[in-house]
Image (tube, rainbow, N blue to C red; front, side, top):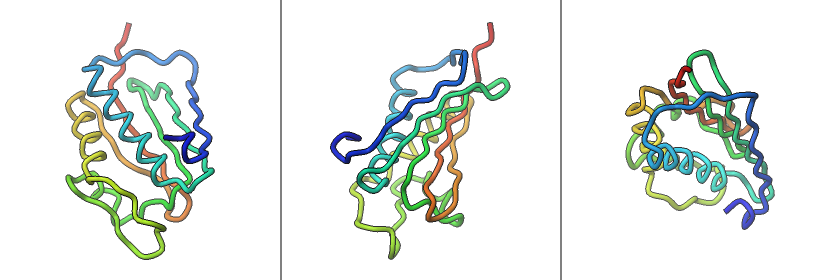
Length: 136
């Protein structure tokens, strides 16, 4: 997907990231949804960064993009089922069901974690997934 849109896709892993306990397929599905969204909403030739790091007793995964950003009023709403942002000035409509982010949120909660979005409208987004780290 990234190559087809001429994106640069980078992975940054900070030091020794601990494992998390969970269902591998579900965790993979959540991460794929985050990355696929970043690719879809970033203009052609953009940059997507996936960063993984320890954050205290948690593992933090961030997916940063060069997309249009999310208005503050919509940041919680977009994690609901079938929710999509449709507004003038956001560029061409992106196809999708509006389920991807709700899946990420459900996967995070099922694993004792959480999922949210940060950023400034018009300056891209950082989608965050935090999961409890496996100690030892």
